Length: 446
Image 1 (cartoon, rainbow, N blue to C red):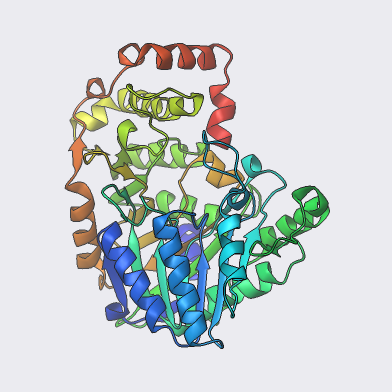
Image 2 (tube, rainbow, N blue to C red; image 1 turned 90 degrees about the vertical axis):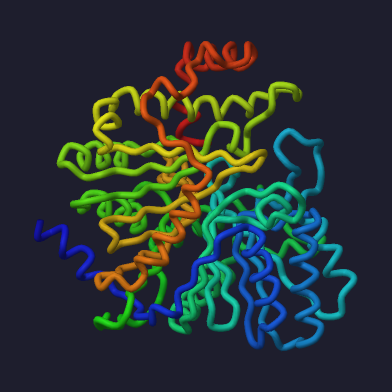
């Protein structure tokens, strides 16, 4: 117990006023807030996302950024996206130049240009991508797992539900901006995508390996601030790879130290082995565990039965089979309500929530999917919040009420569809995957 306490007690923190922490409740509210913050920016805007899509919402955000830059050429604007993701089309779509073509077009038609940096976490996309989150605008951090496109920003009728938080803190904003400058933009592996003269990935492979090694040792820079009874503590954490991953270490520690209750949000039910073990141990010691996960139809890879089926469309069914096995193995915990599984579904929308809340004192807001890929391959970050005095409890309770309103509580594993209920093409695909044991590999890279 002493070692458990000391890990968080020794963690450096940034102190914030509780009123400087705000929760947003919808994709539309998030988009409106982000656009307004860009318009009001006075000295810096740092956008970091997996991708900034070449669709209506992506163009709106880039248009707002360029308008801000033309109004104030001294405004420090940097956009960071994944290097590989930006230079290809959507999965299953025809081959294209990707989103980089849009970045280049905007730059060529503007007097004051904005660099869009491609961050190559590995030499191939399947082996790791930029999954950092957080938009720094002046002295404010807007944090969400969302990327920037039509569905994440609810530009049209559909939305992809995520979590959205706004934190006013110069120290936190400086720390996150400092990491981007020192650990990413200054490295030769990172190049501007908004220019036709960018190198090809093959040329960058030696420096990409060096870059990943540097990232594996990196931490957010900031001065420790004591947390008084009137404040909340925040620690930005970053991690990449399986070894020496500070984010993974503290995710594991959060669950291991839970004494009363855990809330876990994940879009893909595919826990890394260490999280799975810690959840089982928590249940064994009597902790109340709440898991909020998307229905297979709310998965971003889901393909409706009436549409043309592609192999990638089998993923939501694999995740659902994982969930069914887990529920079946813990049927007694479900019956006693010690384990509550909430499955989210709302019309034709999709689900992308992540995060952990432990004993209503520790909250991790993150883009980490809590799956083996996030645990081993992608560059991830998160904000660990220590709220020992309960200043944010009502805000998080309101957030979870908003999340749970479109969920169904699972009372027995039999409520979750079995393999023999799936469409024939899906059944054939999954049986073939299971027969050759390819599901073990897929769980680690998808």
